Amino acid sequence: MIDTPHTLEVRRSLRRFLAGQASRLAPGDAVVCGVSGGGDSLALAAACVHAGLAVTTVTVDHGLQDGSAQVADDAARTCTELGATARTVRVQVTGAGEAGARAARYRALGECADGRPVLVAHTADDDAEGLLLALARGSGTGSLAGLREVSDEHPVVAAGAGWLGRPLLHARRADTVGSCAELGLAVWHDPHNTSSEVLRSRVRHELLPLAREILGAHVGDALARSARMLREDADLLDGQARRLLGDALGDPGVGGAGSLPVDAVAGCPAPVRRRVLRQWLGPWVGPLTSRHLEAVDALVADWHGQGAVAVPCPASTMGGTRRLVVRRRRTPAGSQLVLEQEDRTP
Image (tube, rainbow, N blue to C red; front, side):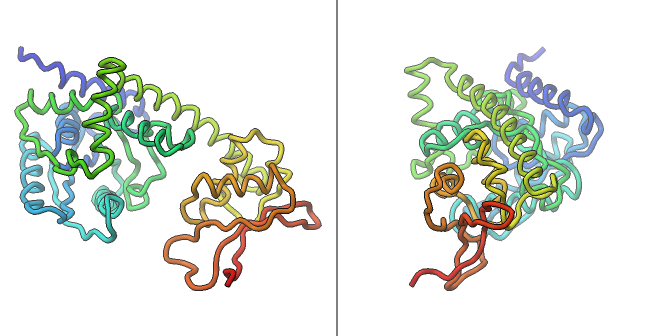
């Protein structure tokens, strides 16, 4: 028998994932795999076909690099040879940077899925890299936490997928690339993944190798394990905050409202209180930084008559002279945090 240790590791991670999702995914069920043509996604597609899933692969051509259409066609042909139904989709990317390409990719995957789950090929190495990047930004537990194996709230779900799954979080990139070599699959190497101008690429090719040299060969596995444990902690605290916010607003299904009773959150431990505030504001504002959240939190925990806190406006809304602010206000029902519009200061 051919020695295929890397392929076995990839399949083991997938089996572990399927065992945890047995209530909603079984052999023979239809799934969509996002496949770029790289080692991670090709190894995932091969493992899913081997596991007996009815696999449709979707390769998104962003049109941002010379030869991208050929790369997409080659990936689709490889997936067809594996036994999957293969599709390629050309998208129009708006905006600069990876964010625009990612948004277009997830939108295309969700639309192609049409209710089926979408599986993507993030590995333990992605968790390790994400943890280091979040540490460098001074992030909280939510950002330090590892990727969720399953997400029901995600742009790909909003675009039409049933849910998003990441079956390879217990496999390493060495396993996925090694599996492709063992299976004789031609892998496309994205030049962005080795570019010194991309921060994650430098973490992958410079920082992590140095960390392995200093701290030991398994430091990446240890970082990924830490990220997974932080995810469990973050999910627990987020759940507590969600229940508390629902009680405060009188409706557990409400994710935000124009005002929040101060007394409902004032006595909470700081990690829970800040999560309540983020969840309350989330549906109404743009991306919140830690500085925004600290200033809003001070309206509850360190109130000394300070003025309103400006928070980001949602994208493409409220231009001109208006802005969003949070202020503390006394009402007949007690002190409230109020989110409202106001004129910008000249």
